[in-house]
Image (cartoon, rainbow, N blue to C red; front, side, top):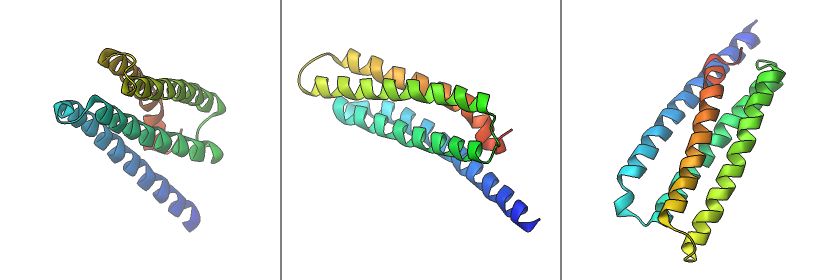
Length: 138
C-alpha cells in the first residue's frame, strides 16, 4: 500500500515538474524572441532549438515511463510517438537550415520558417501529451 502511494506521489511530483518546465520553456521562447536583436540569428536559433530539444526529451521520456507503467494506452502512445517523429524531422531540418545560413546559404526567413515549424510540432506534442503528464496517465 505504501509503495503504491509513494509511486503516485512520485508521478504527481514528476507531473508538476513537467508542467513547471513547460511553462518556463514558453516564457523562455517568448523572451528569446524579444531579445533577438541582442544576438545573431544563428545564436538565437541554436538557443531556441536547444530549448525545444530539452522539452521534447522531457516529454518523450515521461511518456515512455507512463507507457511502461501502463498508464497510457498503446493508441495514445502511438499518437504521441507519431508527433514525436514529426518533431525529430522538423528539428533536424531546422538545424540543417541554420548551418546552411551560417555558410551564407539561405535567408533569415528560411531559418525563421523552419524554427516556426519546429515550434508548431512541439506545441502539437505538448497539447496531446501534457494532460497525460499532468494527470500521471489515464
